[in-house]
Amino acid sequence: MATTNNYGVRQALNNKGVKNNQIGYKDGFVTVNGKNFLKPGSVTNGSAMSTQQNFNNAWQGMAPTKPVSVPTVAKASPMVQAANNVRNNTTTSTFTPPTPRLEQTLNSLSGLANTQASKLPEFKYDPDSDPAYQAALREAQANLGTAQRNTNAGLRATGQGRSSYSETLANQLANRSMESIANTTLPQMMQQAYGRFIDKANYDQSAAQQQAAQLANLYGLQYQQDVTKNMDEAQLTGTYLPAEARQAINNILALKNQAEDKSTTSDQRTALSTQADGIRRQLQSMGINPAAYGANVNASNASQNASAGFRTLAGQQSDLQQKQSNMDAASTVSQLTGRVVAPQNDWQGLYRQANDPNAPLTMQGQQQQFNNNLAQQQQQFTEGQQGWENQFNQAKFNEDVRQFGMQYAISQQQLALSQDDNARQWADLDYKQATSSGASGGLTANQVLQSMKGLYSVPVYGTNADGDSVKEGTKITTDSAQRQQMFQNVVDAGLSDAETRQILSSLGMTTKEISDYKKLYQGN
Image (cartoon, rainbow, N blue to C red):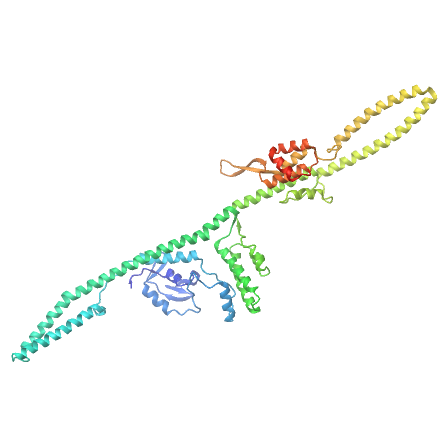
């Protein structure tokens, strides 16, 4: 074990499943849940450091007030947690989601890097704890005993027996044996132990490097799934949903499906709802309105809102452009019809609004209505005056015939008719100028053309010198569905075939395109 203070206490606690908000530092001690856990050997750059042995001793001696869960990739789902709570008659007021897997992988990789960064511990050799040395020592002692017995037997055979000489020989044999062990066997055993020490260190380093490579590859795959994929979707849809929020929504849907199961009891359903309330608070803390996944929304309806998230800047700009286009279309229809209409996505509905007799008139429409009423009153007055004049002329004609004869009376009537025709022509011109729609009462070809340009033109955007998006003009839409609606609206205007074709050509429609659309509306 390492004896230097190179073991990060906070990282080690994180690897054990202790959250950062549970870890503190007070009066020289690292605390867990407010209780002293370990006095670090040193504090470097704000990080408490200790030895791995001291940390392991402190961890084994810690008695937490509640179990500290070790995070794993295959953590129990919220439904299993809720079911366990019901089974154990214990419910929690808040739901604590598992640590995001990206953070788990990064913490594991960081912990592995910290371990690899530590120095190789000092090699120490203890012959008393080396099985190989102890075996060699026992063998040498056995050989020494055999040699001493053989020597004593030889001396007794020559009649010397036990003597100081025999003891000297025995001691010499023992000394040579111990010297051989100390000078030959012990260095060999030490060298073998050092070799095993180096081999284990190399093996541990290689295994750690392989594990680090696997974790780095796993982190890349998880980042691709949890971050890059969401960013790509945001670019396409204009809506961004973080991986944590997506997981939270999926957890709520899972709880709803479990709660709506017929086999779920009332108490279990209450527990599941409590779990879901905790996740909804998590969503709200992320800035996402949880109402779409509320307790009053069933699983089927809630699943339809599973892709709701934050509108990106590009998405917001697209929404703004759509609103502006709808307002421009409504303004154009209001100017053409004189009726107040509300902006809407379906532009054909604008004319349906305008055709509603209860739709209020615009200021221009009110002025036009006033002019029409005034012209009608003037026409009625003129017709009444003409009737009186006709009666007067008939009486005058009869009197002229009686007094001056028929020829004189006819000449007087011709003179009066010439004067009336001149006055009538001026009155008719005044009436036509007062009514914009003329005698037919419909839109002119130019008015229909301008209406279609207003309804089916889309903005053209460019980039200025500062790199900002600016509107440069408009063009007729290229969307096939919109162009088909435009064709139908022009045909429904009731103009002549020549005027209709001229308008469609001015709107950029080709001869083939007009022919194809006419096949769809054979009655026109």
